[in-house]
Image 1 (cartoon, helix red, strand yellow):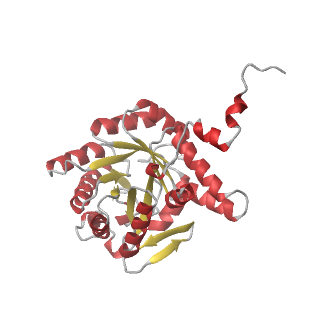
Image 2 (cartoon, one colour; image 1 turned 120 degrees about the horizontal axis):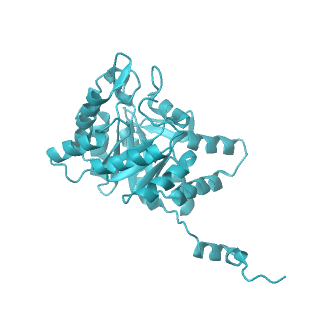
Image 3 (cartoon, one colour; image 1 turned 45 degrees about the vertical axis):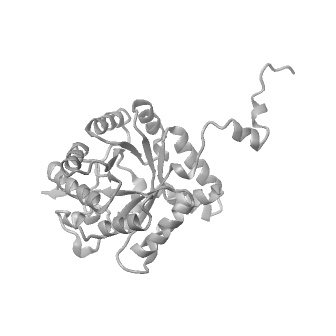
Length: 324
């Protein structure tokens, strides 16, 4: 049999395959989410996220140094607020002595080179578990945006390199950019959760921060997973308002959205490989249904291949160790 072209020629060996690989995954691609808890010497595994922990600041510093040694250059901070700090205003979110603010300062003092990103949303601080202020059963947009601006400025004052609004309120990127500029935080970046969908894949994360909504759901502000072109509209608006990086969340069930966004914009695109996606791989591996390490690398490569420049993933450390 004569063939003019044999495509298998370039698949014959690992060396050949790596030579012609179209997508390369490295620790430089990863953002490592970290969950912070009050206390000292605290390290508790999250039941629905096997192998992932809530940690006090001292243990978090050890983790950050280990991540850096593996080549991971960025962390994304989330805090589990104490119940007595929660209300319907979110005021603990801009407490200069709050857990988030102390954590930012501690990490930047210990490892100034690490890029510290911070979650900007009210749900960890809300008695209702919603990303915004509640009035008469409704999550109100404009008062929430005012709170998010205060929160972002507080994070910038503590030393955050990039604030990451994950709330999906209208107009918050422009308001945050204005607030940062007016307070002379001209070097603080914004990573906008531009296309954040109302997804069932966030469940384990809400366990980690005890931030599940106390009533209803988040569908009046997070996007409908049936929509594609809306994601482009949201993303372009965020860029116009001053976003430096845009994000699609979740990642694996939304690879088409990541590609659409990548094709439409000229800023870095990040994707969030969320807690439910992490938990599914962990659970299937625990049952012996798939090879965990192979599934991690294949999944992350698919996200990179779809167009993501950066990947926030709970597998950051494990994947970086596999690459070493």
